[in-house]
Length: 499
Image (cartoon, rainbow, N blue to C red):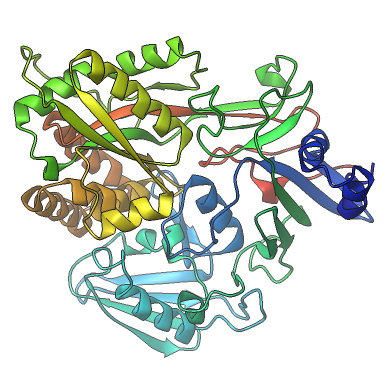
């Protein structure tokens, strides 16, 4: 009762500060409640969130939260259709290669400071030289303020899809100072951060949000360590891939204990993107060895190992980067001599760690000893950015956001883990092909143009797709009128209650 009423400190005192029991109680009381006329949503999650900043590498769930806390100038959907956000209108001069974006009046950040054309111009000027942005913004020569509500981007080459590129979470509008001294998170979106600690994340609806004010007043996500045995009817939010060792790709808001039918509040989708393995060019594996490794490290073999290890599989085999893309066909080759030892790099992500153990076991049967090197997510990306991820095989993930075409394009163009695994020549070829697409193609054609490039990379054994994650939401009796997002989270802006 105390937890349902938001009296968390009193509840903790009553149970003698038993954190394990407190976590179980939080799970049992998760959902939407109305207190004093306001709608509060309480969820639980199995790890702390990293600092919620758009300009640093982020995992899937953090990028979902960025969408709640920040806005971009525009929004791009899964089909490449661009719609307004902070900018209500934009124009593109095809001859001079410049874009103009016209801002809505009276826009403000969560701290009350004004969002103006000057702020936007300064932000993008800084981002152009920021680590990780150089490839994407290399063609942006300058930004200028036309008037307080109009900012211009001068490019040096054609880019009819630029309005979609800057709809990515990485281009969320934030104060320029936050790039350098992010002491308090200041966003521009539907929710503002009230508290972010290693215990919980608390969001409050932002009344001056440019669009429709969120139906939910507050959202609290508690960090609760996974329990060995979930109790009957426990409500949990597992909104990142495979936080539970019993499930390779578990990702849901659920009530455990009963089978919930699809018409009783269940939504399921196959994610856009996949888990994958990269062949690191620094290992200098001959092409025939890469082909043979791809031949024995099939998703079916890895899945069979995981099933034997009693892992619940919430995924389907991946044959290309996106589930809708074609399966490349290769000609089988005879057995090839393999190195006596191989190293595998992986970051702390339960599904990837499970896959690395499966690969190690399969290669062990082939006479190859494997060493798995485990990194934090931040260290993994830092090493890749410095070209110091030296392992023979690299396990990583491609997670696309709601702006699917530009999200896929961006990953191929500038993902540091991908490009450090390629030879300089292959990286240059890939960048050239992508820039050609950017020159000539509208956003609506991006995925069609990207598919043969990804297929060629797989056929040439630069990378090996492993699994597409199956995302499922169960919320019977808890949340109403809520859809599943591209990240597998419930759309928290839509949550409502008639109580």
